[in-house]
Amino acid sequence: MGRRGTCPRVLIVGAGLAGTATAIRLLRFARRPLEIVLLERRSDYRSAGVAYHRDGNPWDHVFNIQAGRMSVFREDVLDFVRWANLEADRRDWPAPWARFEFVEQGPAPRRIFQDYLTDRLAEARREACPGVVLIEADGEAVDMEVRPAGVEVTVRQPLPRGAEAGADPEPTAVFAEHVVLATGLELRDPPFAADVLAHPCFVRNPFSAAGVQKLVTLPAEATVAIIGSVLSAYDSAGLLLRRGHTGMIHLISRTGTMFRTYPGGHEHGVLRLPCPKTLLEPYRNREEFLARVRSEWEAARSTVLRDHPEVDPAVVAERVAKAWEPHLPEAIERIPSAELRTLLDEFGTSIAALRVGAVEYTMAVIERAIHPADGPAKLVVGNVERITPAESGRLVVSVAAPEEKHTIEADLVVSNFGRESDYSRVGQSLWRNLLRRGIAVPHERTGRGLEVDEHGALLSPGGKPAGPVSAVGVLREGDEIVRNGRTGAFAFNLAAIKNQSIAVAARVIEQLEFQDDDLAQDMAHHGHVSNTEEAAPVGFEEAVALEVRRLATRVRSERELLDSRLDVCIRSMGGHPPLPMAASRRDRLMGAVVNRAAVQRLTDVTVTPRQLRRRLGITDGDLED
View 1 (tube, rainbow, N blue to C red):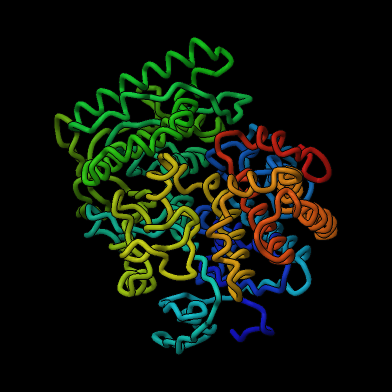
View 2 (tube, rainbow, N blue to C red):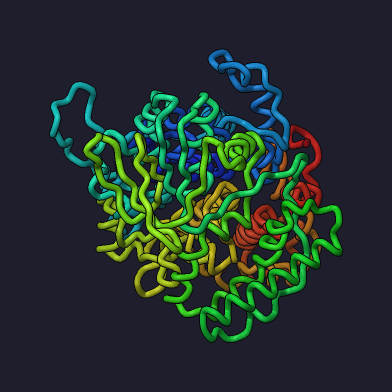
């Protein structure tokens, strides 16, 4: 993987959703030559990851949320819906999707998201500035070492087709000025299934080609046990039911949590609610804290029902959870780390169910099957203690219910994905080596993800940046919880990735532009947006508005026009009053500060994407809703 020319290189490790979204932003944002290497160890995961790749998502698997919330661009709400209706290649799509008209509140097959991201990445590559190139490389990053000028990454190349089993290609060293880690979800083997991981009646990963094959070839009368009642469990159950399954499907849930159906016409919304002040009191003990949470929650729900009659009762919980986000970091700060981890483990599924629902396409088939007492699906509340083989060749699932223990003998047992969020336990070579070198540190407060700063840079054990290494996606789960109050899957889902990809790409570009001089020190002194607004109020808002539009514009020629206008605007700010430095240095510094302000506004989560567009004045051209 030789370097092309002398331009700096950014290596993105992982080409799923998070890596692809970051690559798209880098291709859009870069104004100088830059080589972007998008490294992926599994070719079928490229532009998809485990959640969206075609082999693991049959056509009956749809997004949990509405199609109108699946745009990869927060500032362009309906981009995915427009693509699905106007640009997608439907020649191989089956009925009824081949003639389906996608709408904002409706469903969409998860598998087409891979085509969408592939198309948007190709578009970003075509519309990139001269000298900004994208290289899509196959290989697995297994180690990294921070050097004075960047990072040396050890990459294990995939085996060539036809290679002998056991062959191990010699790893290669790839140098990059910056590395972005976007490795996605890590699989965890459930301890209760240790005896059956290789059993033909056990599905460890229902989002794999092998897992899907077992589901679709299962006899219709077979008994199935699906461990968990989260949305991935609904995918497996829904797939069976839509294919005419008549045998009993047991949904085994530790908490008995069921997700709600989004009402017709549902739109994401943000309410302003009073701060839950009692949550900011000192933490005394678990029972007392949970009592305060319940009291504040009921008060907030009552406020929404009374003051916001336009909000459907089905999504009141979602509105309250979102409104609490700005206040949760202060409340979480008061909870001891061990207690916080326990609360997150115990209530993670319940929090997710409060924060997000599912589209009717998924939920209708589940509800029809589970609500009649004699229906083909049944919710079983209890902990799975062990799965063992039976003499019949089937599997026996031992469940400890609140008041009794019982067993379920099944022809097929499906485990939810079961991701590993504690990176001290992840077995991949990359993570073992990064932790050993002190480049990555597991998140201490939550045990989820890694320690990062406010910009997503990995922190060393001493709390300082470990080097030019950033993280996007699930790696930042713990930080999103304690820093931004994001809960459930919203700590690492598409909504979080959209903002992280913008902020990380912009910061990487800034660091590369300033790495050869001492402007970085000037940024430390003058780089806060509020300071610069005070120093140069005249023209600053106009410059930020232009920069927002430049960052959000897909067509290169339009970005170049905005860039020219932005340069003129920044130069005109020199006398209001001037910063104490030469004009060229001042203009570069001001440009960086304007960029930071624009990024802050593009990633403002206190408003909905539609509100964001109106606030930023994005209402024309190909960004029009």
